[in-house]
Length: 264
Ligand code: 48H
Image 1 (cartoon, rainbow, N blue to C red):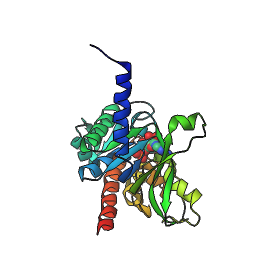
Image 2: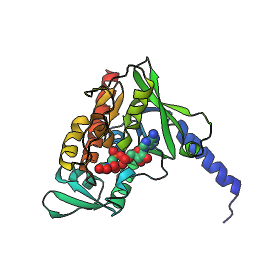
Image 3: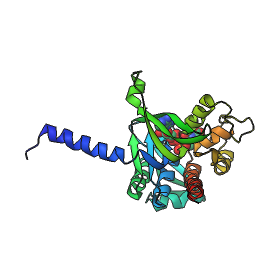
């Protein structure tokens, strides 16, 4: 087989440019490819939204990949069983209501299903800022290569417009924190008006509160997953992931409602 090195180069550059240009104006930008972000992206794409996930690592899966203390197994409760089954993840149950899954299988299948539904997943890209319009409305994300960040290079970022942004950045709640830091007077619907920070581990409470915490907290910004609990000062929950999946699904519903209102 004849292979020209420069043809490989041209194929990659042309394909990437075409794909990248296609995502600079999005319905929804999801920040973080952990379980909540990937699940939100799948439901959004299934509903016909133009959605891309921006993940700073080269791998997807966030904290789900490593299971509990690197034992690559996760626990899912009854309420989220269907979400795993929809993407073909095999579940085992030894005790009523508690299912276990292989975390690598779960991440792979959730991601493959999101991509098959039409979501785009971009890795190696950090969302370092947001675009704000009319002083109080999130209008997109600002991205740069994680490698640039690691090398501390002074390289300016690029902007991606999005009608809705979903903060699925896990424990950090990175997007909410950017707004808190950079937008004077920004107030979130928490008791302090700011990011409250997660509370110590209490799986039952953390899982119970996460759905209520999954909401639009600033015009066009929706919190999901552990980021939602960090924002509202709810507990962490350890290696149980049902809440993350249910929160991702709920975030997609909230985003679709925001998009619907914009169209009306
Ligand atoms: C691009 C970013 C940025 C950024 C972060 O941590 P995650 O897995 O998040 P969730 O909420 O989907 O799931 C949380 C779960 O994994 C977990 O940690 C649990 C259940 N913990 C309980 C406990 O007690 O500890 O994924 C977030 C992703 C990661 O892949 C980050 O790399 C990525 O977001 N990310 N990507 N730009 N600015 N910040």
